[in-house]
Length: 227
Image 1 (cartoon, rainbow, N blue to C red):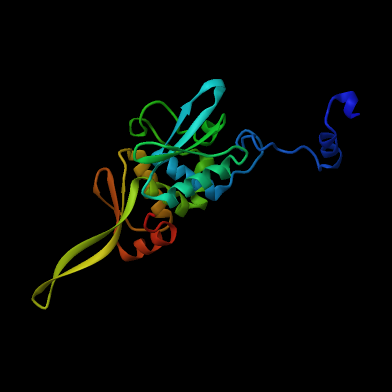
Image 2 (cartoon, rainbow, N blue to C red):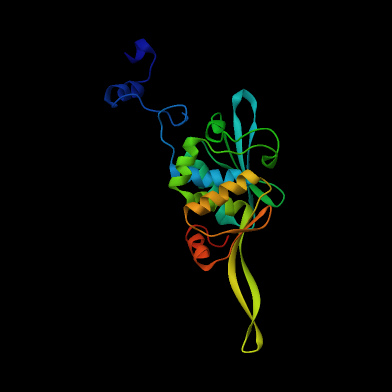
């Protein structure tokens, strides 16, 4: 049968012994009945909205690029791991640029997973989540925030003074900050914080702050200092 059909014996054995048709690793989980790894997707979505982009190449292929600061090798590793989890059949590349490393993956179906893709900067166009994206982020809001804050946020030490016994005393406290020019992305960050009951405030139009102790403690479980 192998000679007659021109099909390898290994393939014929798979057809004979396999439980049925298998989804190829190159298939898109949105175009088939596949399942997205929700935790990795929520994390990568946050990274994409912060420091990611899609670029159209030849033959319908797109490149997903996540720009990562060279100062934080752990974050580069996490971006590569999350990308590989969504497209495990192809390698994830690390392309060195001036001051940063681009985590890059090529696939025809990246726009299926990131329908927010479009021309121009993100802050100049509408950024809204689809229903299926909203469901995944609702299930994993902490990882979505991890992606956002690791892209456009930071954990810093603030200080303030107050009178104690007639003298000014200085005390320090940790605070998370998130900055983004897109009002839509800022609203998504606020929504995810609300899902975790984390109090936040807006000192400026494009800047968000989490400074209350209980809120910082929750974010420390999901994010923590960059490294």
